[in-house]
Each structure stands twice: as C-alpha cells, then as structure tokens.
Image (cartoon, rainbow, N blue to C red):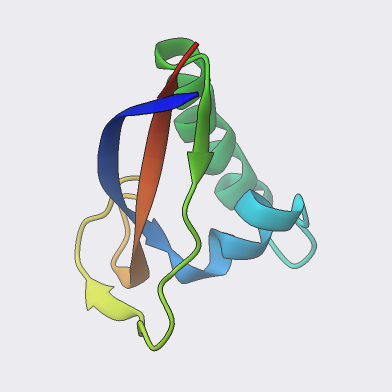
Amino acid sequence: MKITHRYTYQIPDILLSAIFNGDISGLEQDDIDSLNKFMDGIDDEFDHYTWDMPKDGQESYFCRDNDVFNLACNVYDLDLVIFEQ
C-alpha cells in the first residue's frame, strides 16, 4: 500500500490508550461519546488508515481547543496516515 496523505490531529492525552489499545477504562461516558463521534468521522472519510504513535521524546502540551473535545486539556499531535487501496 502507498501512503497518499498524512493529517495531524491534536488528540487529548487521556484518549491515547483508547485509540491504540481499545482501552476505555477510566474514561467518562462523555469522553467515550466524543471519541466515538470523532472516530466515526474518520471512518466515514477514509477506508485505509493508521495512527502514528507519538514520537520518542514528544511531550503533551496544553491546548484550549483540540480536534476531539471542546475542552482545554493536554494533547499530543498524532499523525493519521492514509493509504491507497
């Protein structure tokens, strides 16, 4: 498969385990609902994709507005890699 696009999203740090491991333990229902809505939008738009893990040494940073929540929180910049079928 060939990489066709790469998009960077600001993802709240508390959602990394849910995105990479499917582990939603410790998340409140509102957080789960927001994540599901965000991921459904990704699934609707792209057929073949993967998330890049945070780069070694990358630290989260505070952001007032991010791509999943309408709340200020610590985020990581994660790349969504889109593949050609």
